[in-house]
Image (tube, rainbow over all chains, first blue to last red; front, side, top):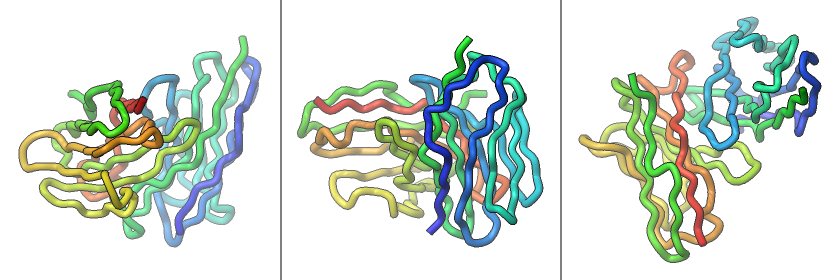
Length: 113
Length: 116
């Protein structure tokens, strides 16, 4: 069945470091791909999305490119801030496979000042 | 322009009691989804509802759990005779149309259920 695998955390970085969180997926066809962010004690916020191959989603300095050939959607940011500390979830939505969003297990990011 | 609303935000129940979680979708949205997040885990799909219909309940436990989305009022996730293993965060999401590629789901703040 459809699934999402993302790198295990926690990831600890110093402020202004480069961030990569890897995400790969398994799905038949062409799902939409998402990154959500969850701050402590809060719900999920949509960070960015891509709906077809080679699309690049971007928001707040984060970006991810939908790579069909490698079935990946890695999240990157050039310079992280302390306020970026949160849990990041990669997810896919595949309408004809059902309308549920499939989530990865989440990657916790700590950014030190 | 209110987002998805859930209440209560925190709910404490003793083992054996019933828990009722409410979700009001975004204005104009008629599709509701419930997810459960166990501690330190990702979200797992439970059920997808449209008004007065359950479309997909493949993620719902077979016993004690039920969901509804009546013609009027919020969607309700009901857990009967709660056990400690039901302690989790329950998130509701809504979408404007069927969850096609362009219509992502918007999430509420969640209800954190603690069973003592």
